[in-house]
Image 1 (tube, rainbow, N blue to C red):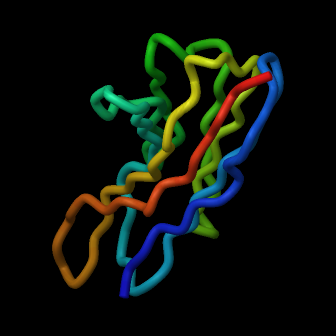
Image 2: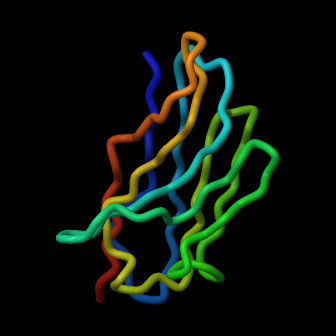
Length: 119
């Protein structure tokens, strides 16, 4: 069974930092892209950051300069370092990966981790 397991969410004050982790496990034969999305109450899910196998990354406009995505290919793990957090960053953060499982490339999602930025 293939799964993405996130960790690192929680409550933080404005201006603080958090680091999210997401580890992929199971019978995985390749990973093209790993990334993070978020969804705040009443809003659509939006892309936060994505990183491809070669290391190239892109970010959503609202997090550029504050968030850093990185990846450990040997561990099939992606990280999101979130700095200078704002109340607007409050959301459920979902890990996403495009992976090859049983010969087919497909989209996989984690269960989500809550990030709350509040004083």
